[in-house]
Image (cartoon, rainbow, N blue to C red):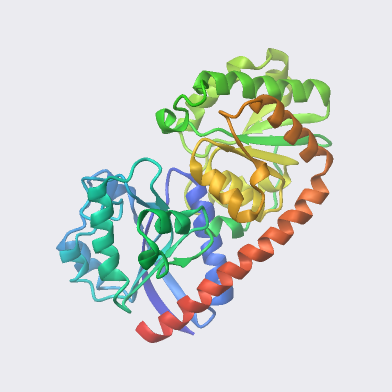
Amino acid sequence: MRTLKVLHLASFDGNIGDNANHNGVRFLWKKYLPEYDFAITPLEMREYFWKWKSFDDGFADMVNEYDLFVCGGGNYFELWVQSSPTGTSVAIPLEVLRKIKTPCLFYALGLDPYMGAPDICIERFKRFLDYTLASPQFLVSVRNDGSLDSARRVLGGEYADRIHLMPDGGHFVQPEACTHYELTPGARTIGVNLAGDMLDFRFKSCNGKNLNDFKRSTAAVLCDIMRRMPDVNLIFYPHIHKDYSFLADFICGIDDHLLRRRITVAPYLHGQGAERKFFDLYRQCALNIGTRLHANICSVGLKTPSIGIVTHEQIHELYGYYGMAERALRFSDDNYAAKLDDLISDSLENTERISCRYSDVMSMVTKDAERFLGIMNCWLDSVV
């Protein structure tokens, strides 16, 4: 076994979904790349967002001290960043990239045009790809949330055909079985994740529906489910701190006696290792409903029935990849509330059948992961 010193640029704090992703990646690399021992040094991407650090010559010097540089996973190929030399959050100037001699892996990144993709960003990103895709020093992959289709649509086949698909690591998160006082023994619990960030983007008025309509209709459906099914409880999952403020407003639409007796809130956890306890809650619930990407990815990976609420197109694309588009609902749909009620009721009635279907889906996801990890293994053998 060969030890590789790895500098890993990604987000590690403040979003438990990122931790689930990294957990699954470590599991996969240990299983499918046994020839290598990855000694990973984390480098927090948000410190570059906050302008605490810069992608400058010092960054290149730091990367060159390692055997391997990894960027991802995460939604870092978002194409709206006009202040970036690459048009994305991976804002490494080409003149800095050329000074890096270490092999570089861009791993399972989200390629996201949905918040905008100005021509200047597309042109800059193409220049970035022209350099990285032409050199054996670099290996570029995107995650299974429609990113490859977005690449084909926005960049063209000449680029998309050279970018690899690698499923998000959250599909393979390894939770730790433990006792959760948030769960009532004997009850069926529905876990609910409601994203509290980017609200203007997520809930821009569509089909005459807006954020307040979503809150009212979703809360009403959940209340009605609990009234009809006395053994069903709710737990809310905050993934980032902004989810709390959203939740505080959302629960104003829920009956007081239900809030006091049948609803709990998971702790706000983040950081490496916290995902093992947090996503065991996902595993133990009868059904999970979520607007965040990893709320859905991890549910499918854990074979817990899930419903994706589409407030970002990535959720629709994700379930399309699974071949389960019917499990993703748009809040702007006509009869959204009735559809949500029907899907919750059916999911609670047919939990075992849906879990079996998720097992089949995960067989496909695993094959896609194995395919890319085989490519990655050959690449590592040739460059490190």
